[in-house]
View (tube, rainbow, N blue to C red):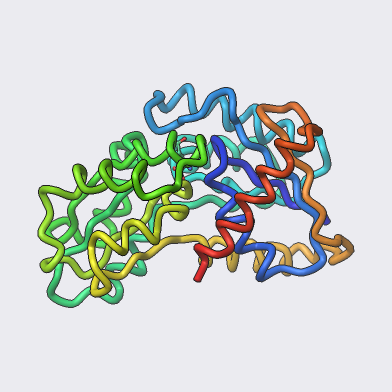
Length: 258
Ligand code: DGL
């Protein structure tokens, strides 16, 4: 079986790294929409058009299941994608539900892209969970270009995070939701700034579990060997240095899974 993954860029590799750990017998197609990253600052219509282009390409190349490994694209396009294609489509949303489930008396900070946080899908989620009075929202879109440029060193990342975190007293927070797949690469930096008492919660494992359930339900053949074919905005990636970069990021993402 071939599983298609799609993100605006390298963020979805953090979900792919999880899938490589949890799912056996699959081959993967990974579509990074490199020419159009970031999505978080675009309009819903623009992101929806990009999601349709990516899904078309992945299904044309033989994907039997699609993982929208991007919270922003899910919020803009998941219904459109599910209406258009018969294959199972797994989306992502900021993991507010698990954070709220273990909520006690402290607050929860939800981080995501600008577009995810202002979308109706997110507002509906907050209303459904009835958690408005104890969550705060913080767009952290500045982390997306840092991840795309592979700038993971402390000097590049911490000044931005410290500035964004300035208004928050983390002694009052129980958890931070990492509601964008790019943010997973920065877990270590975030934890070191907010301290060990604050839980960092993301939706990657939950997404991969839903993927495994969809595979089982469809009875898809476990005949793959973990091969990954990469695409950048529709173009197959063949340059060795680009392929090496993708594999290096999967390794970094796998380390961030811990
Ligand atoms: N990785 C994406 C997400 O999970 C979007 C990042 C962006 O392109 O702004 O929301």
